[in-house]
Image 1 (cartoon, one colour):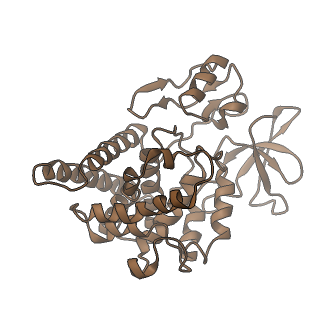
Image 2 (cartoon, one colour):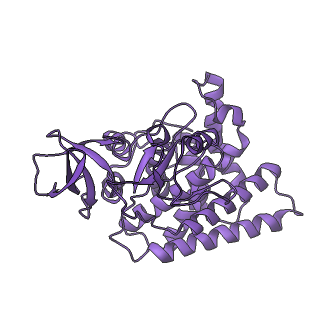
Image 3 (spheres, one colour):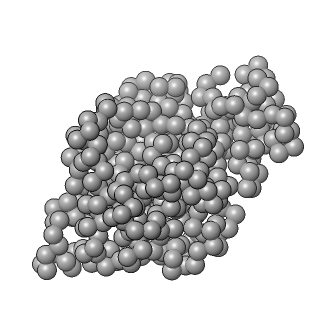
Length: 359
């Protein structure tokens, strides 16, 4: 299975992973044949990438949580955010709905912790496919999962992990109070528009004050755009010390945002996003958490077409635990799989230069 931009997908390619729309409905089933019309339709629907199976790769890439669970959480976050947007000041009449929503999200957080807590060797290899309409909700799930995996690697206990996970689910709640015309603007933001974007951290935190979750979960909404060197927004004078949950979520938030197509730019590859985060360690991001994050993110998922530093092309066949940038690669010769494998943990003089989408 390979992750490819739709503008690189060829007619006749086989869809490797079903596409689910923002309402949880099946848009196109795994195994479907892509046609030019279907590709055009997906682009019109706001998608820009898909997973395909082809002659180079039909390996199964498993998400670390079941797709149906991911969709259920995204749908509940969507419902919760929509309720919040209609009811900024929680009234006595509607507080029951808010409490029920928080209880459901808490249960999802507990279930995720239960499922992943004992998997210390787990790595994140799936780049999620989002369309523009579902971005905020899918992004919230991804940030929660990535934060949870980093939190487990950091040795946090179950209760802390649950608080971290639900806080990560709700970190962008303040964006429901920002006009969509600004959030989805394809061009550069004006100073005033950027000021409004920055307000989502304060707006979200102020709203969450009414919600029955831990204060350490709420603080993430306020602090996830603050940097360890004191830069970012809002300023430290209004937010207090930068909490460890916020430091973790800041990394997960930027990674998932960079690897997502946005209205103003195309997605970074996982390796490009990781390189960016590594370059900002100790200034923008917490160095200790970056080290844990880098060991957990698979920059070249199994099935990826890659170009090596010696000029050869290949397909990633397996991963080396703890060293995701140095997988085992099967070489391609004359556009065909050669059967020859090289382990980049052993061939230290060769590195992956880039992901290829076509040869």
